[in-house]
Amino acid sequence: GYHLLAVWTVDVGTGARSPRAQAVVRVDCSAPTVTEARFDRATGVVQIAFSEPIDPATLAVGSASDSIRLLDAEVPGTLHGGTLTMDGDRRVAVQLDAAADAWWRNRPVRLQVGPPAADPEGHVVAAVHETVFFPGGDDPSGGFLSGEVYDDTTGRPLAGAAIGLYAA
Image 1 (cartoon, helix red, strand yellow):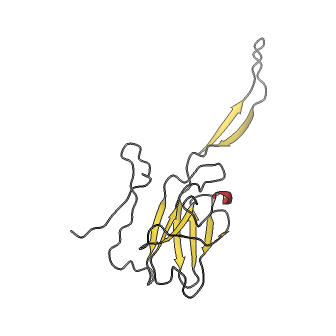
Image 2 (tube, helix red, strand yellow):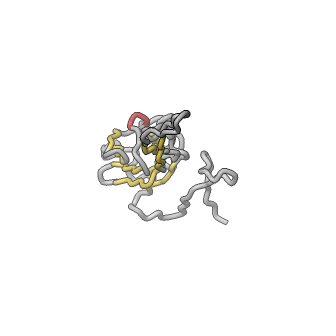
Image 3 (spheres, helix red, strand yellow):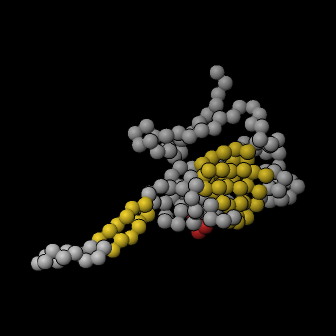
């Protein structure tokens, strides 16, 4: 939040007070989060929106250490790259390979966004945002589970938690 900082000096002998000087200080203790992720299969563009401005120097795509990771959801471990562009200070677009036989065509695409993505103050994304874009539009046909897992003691997102959906 914002805080008002006001200071003045007091003369020890006379008790006279100087004019007040003040400054408004913004204390930012929150980490950025992903607020929206979309995949346009017609153009091969993944769009990601963040809750606050993001430092472009912390964004990259293609390797395990990058902040944006794209995979075939049914073939774990094989990361794919793309061309990253900023759209303002809170939105990023990733253009995937546009070839007719590109890896993502008719395949479920897993998007993971996490550290080292950070805001301009250096606050790193607190937890990995993960979603799967299934072929055939917005209809998550078959089994689909989406959510977040929180640490019981801190109330913060629990990094690295795995969620599974099993037939009972």
